[in-house]
Image (tube, rainbow, N blue to C red; front, side, top):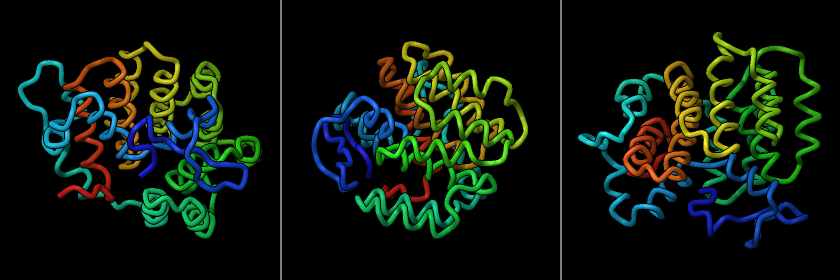
Length: 249
């Protein structure tokens, strides 16, 4: 999995192979946004100790600080298929095979507004592999549309710029993606925990399975950074419930 713990993050060198070492600010941001379930659960472990691993396997009931908006849904994940190329690419990433992940996404069609999950991961992977300008050129060349507007924001770094770009995207198929991007931008801006939770909750309520997992992950990250342990565990459990590759029984 990608960056299970912050202290164990890896960066791509000039030859795009994985190498241990300190991250530049831009690469750290990209890898944070190209996160996996292991990122959220790993940070929960880092914050709370080994007991978090057991707690993350169940809901965190009876805790007033937990957020019911992120409680695992037994029905939602079971009823919705995960795009097969996205599942295969994420499996390759979790096995530290980024070249294979990229090949899988490109073979399936690469960047395409009609395949939002694949396109989102394609952007994240390109940013993580230090191809920022190429990714932005590709996204900017797409025909205009609500989801493309969100995708263009996602390919940028500045939180204020991203929030401005998605300001008018509300409702419809692109709405939950816009809320996910808002949650990510608020989280990257820091210290706006209510805004992160609100945007993530909207994305979780209306989005497809991929959006729901990502929304739960950003909520988990925000809760950890805000020292809200119960909310972090609740969000991590929801992310696990939505993730088809979660290895836990």
